Image (cartoon, rainbow, N blue to C red):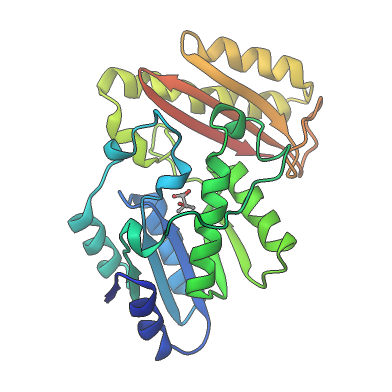
Length: 273
Ligand code: PAF
């Protein structure tokens, strides 16, 4: 595995590679969810590139960037064992200069739900993803469905900027008890971890209601909110794949989402129907 730490090192590493290229952008603290993305990239492509970069521009003032989990040694091992060809591991100075051009998320879709709770977050995500895609030139790029709004916005960015890249959405990976894997789960103590299960239980209830024929948004959201008590819920929402609010579930074009705080840790989860 080649480790590239700058744009020029990455360019040199990519020069000898031929055929399709699968790319998995990450912020490190890799878990089985990331491994699933890497395995899919490995299966579908001749070359696999993973980036690990804790992107400062997607953290808001007050969000503790310095506390984001960093696991350099373990992450390198996971990449190596997963058959990654090139690991891109830049410093902030290799990615950003002063006073740069930025990508701005769309007015509505970028500023609802996650974007309302974290205004400006998606500007940072889209800016860094644009940089990474331009540096790596992948055939396919792999994202988890857990960050559904991020996935929708990156898909829109690639369409709006006519970027010829296949975006491959991958299912959320869960623990056996339903907890969605997230790098933030390391912040949970044992009792918080139990409380965190309320998110997946609420989504399971939503799925059950729809399977039983109840597609009414207000009733589904009401039942979910009851199950989420006493967590501090930021939102429960029912949207279509374009992130437009729905009054009723449309099978095949709906995402039910939840964001809540478990202690100080903010968790998100969703189910696609
Ligand atoms: O989902 C993430 O880990 C990040 O938002 C991403 C896409 C790597 C951009 O920093």
